[in-house]
Amino acid sequence: MKEERRNKGKVKRSKVALSKLTFHKLDWLEYVTMGLGLWFLFYPKPYDVLFTALLCMPVIGLFLNGFTGRPSISSLVEISKDDDGSDTYDVADFIDFAAWIILLRVLIDYEYESFYSILIPGTIAFVIMLVILFATHKLIDHTTKSKTWIYVSLIFNVFLYSYAGTYGANCVYDKSEPKVYNVDVVDKRITSGKHPTFYVKVTPWGHHYDKEEISVPKSQYDEIQIGQAIKIDLKQGLFNIPWYYIE
Image (cartoon, rainbow, N blue to C red; front, side, top):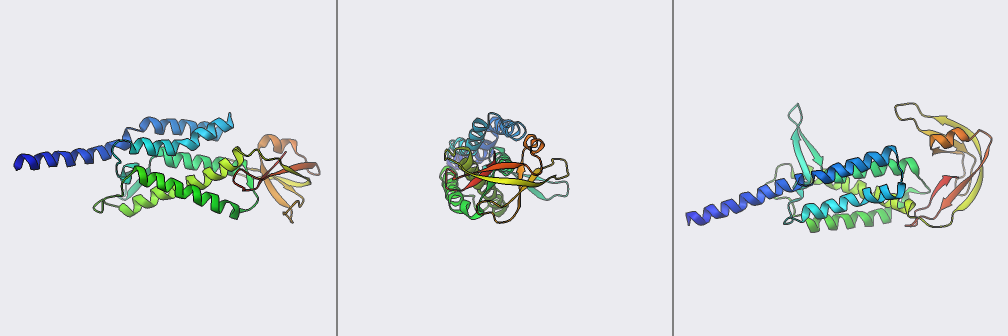
């Protein structure tokens, strides 16, 4: 009986160790994700290839992390102590780093017609990601400390990735023919700060009944002059999320 209890104890300890070690076995995937993310953020060429690779990282990471015996969801979040003794929650970088870089890039590169058009496709993507998450990982044991914060930090990043990835895929993979609108540039400005943003203000067009500012790359900002006539292309979007850009 004692021998049997010792063996059971060893099995339990090995399972706990496996749960804790699984996440660290994917350090290489985190480094790949961070490298691709920084490349995509600061020099997004080839754009489609980098976006696709970064979009795949969270899904690949969930399957690889869950491949070794379906570990707990807590294996995706590392808890550490701040200097003041409070806990910090570090979600696996192949999820949160990919999510934030995709979000930043699509906010810089694309203008959308209506926020509400992303709700349904974004929610569908979010549900699919949750299904993958819970299919590859077990629920957190009720004895695990900070269970709520682990769930919140992880699911928030999955939510962010789902909506940003959906909108990015909607624009990157869109092959629809654009509807072209002619507008005039009435003003232009640059926001101050470490990372300035460049805007041109144009006359009303389509469903845009007021003058509005559109962010553009610096190279395009330097070329466009106040009073110049330019063209705005409106596209349908892969998931029927209309978006537009200045030619």
